[in-house]
Length: 141
Image (tube, rainbow, N blue to C red; front, side, top):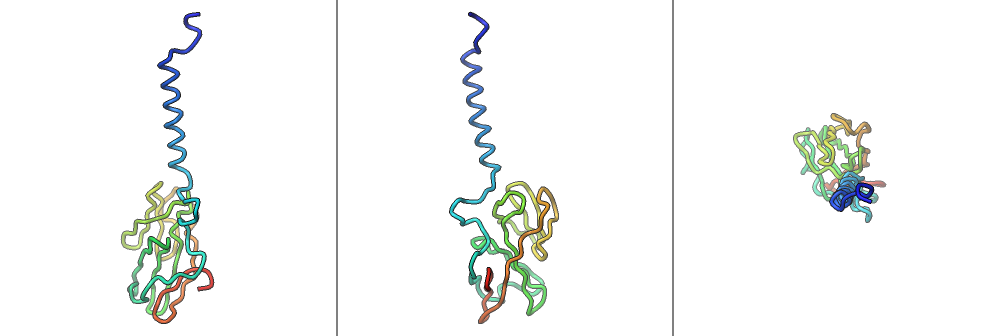
C-alpha cells in the first residue's frame, strides 16, 4: 500500500547516518591503542641526558608518553601524558601547558594539575630519577 513503507531514499539516508554516527563514537573513544603503545612507561625507560631538561623548564617525551619538569638543579618531576578524560596521548606542549588534542583538556606540565576541562583528574605521577647523568622514568626507576 502506498504511504505505509518508507521511501528507498529515506532508508538509505538513515543507513548512511547510522554508519557516520558509529564513526563518531569510535573517534571519541579512549584514543588509546589496543597494543598498549599509548600508555605511560610500565618499566624504567631511559629518556636521555639529564641536562636536556633545563632548570625551571619542562620537556615532553612523546614516544614515551611522559613529561618531565625540573624545578631545581637536582629535582625532577614526571607525569604521564595520557589524558585523564578519555585516554588520548597528549602531544602538545606550549611553555608549561599540555593540551590534549582529542577534547581540549589542558594540564600544568610542572604539577600535572588540570587547567581546563573536560578532564577533572590530574595527570598520573611517574617515578623519575637521574642515574649516571640520564633521566630514567617509570616504575622502579
